[in-house]
Picture 1 (cartoon, rainbow, N blue to C red):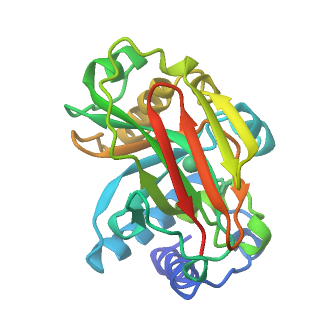
Picture 2: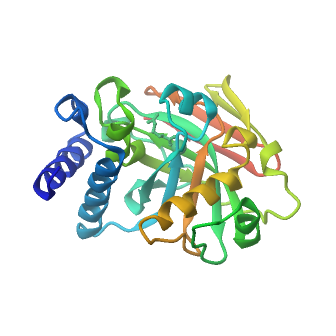
Length: 260
Ligand code: 0L1
Ligand code: MG
């Protein structure tokens, strides 16, 4: 794949997001698209957003649950980036007409107190560098028709990143067994999904360590102050107009928003 094709495919996905228009997965036309080419398209997409003046809030990990990894036949999660325009404040409604076919999943976010540079980063390194953890709800919104894609497709599409609601309640991680943190996700008071922190590659800190080591392959590091989404503790649930979403993280807090 040459540089022109990479730019064209990044533009194609950027336009799909901006126009809120689902599109045919790119591997339909490029069946041999590799994971590394897909990350080149993602990088181009990220550069495009940055050139438009959007700021990166932090990287995110996706496909971190065993179920999603088996489903996508991968041994390693994927990453993408969350931008400032994707952030919703606590209490702010999610506007359906800004999106295509959003789903919500509950996550545990990390905020580092110091940079972490791979390779060789361990979960212990991550915990030692972590200033705070906080509840987060991620809204994923694949730009592909019917949320159907292969691994390279979803990597190119910035790992379906769309919106994030980060709790204002930040907690020092000391003494908290994050793998044991229970999370419940309700839609209109009906329990839809539940899980524990261990659903995220055994422990959310493992996810951050993997991310640091993956970013090291392109000579990048995790930076202090970034908000890092570690991956879904719960499965993702499709949203419809009028829904009230409530999620609770044992010991960490609670978030609620409405879909309008
Ligand atoms: O954050 C995530 O786990 C999403 C990764 C992409 C897979 C999907 O859109 O379901
Ligand atoms: Mg996610």
